Image (tube, rainbow, N blue to C red; front, side, top):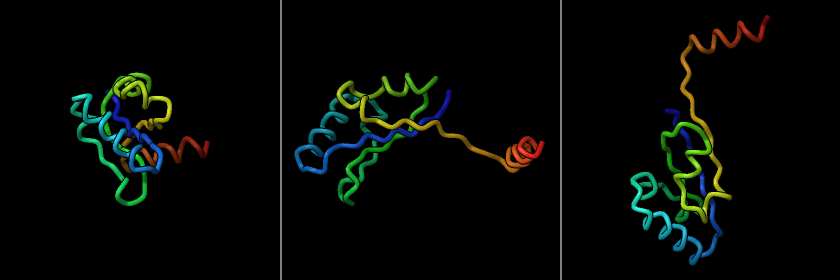
Length: 92
């Protein structure tokens, strides 16, 4: 499984914040219920990390009304060995 960071924006209005939060909480999904929110700091977005087979599966974990606005980023971890191999690859 691959880890994905999902960012879901919403409008900067109180009603939009409440609607987005309520939509997440009503799903009952562990991932959505535990999303992090930036609204109180002026960033009207939710963030969550989940594991899925691919971006499409990650997108389907979201409520349908929020899927089109979501940004989904595959996450990777690197080691120093990875950096060295990348440098060698780019030098040749």
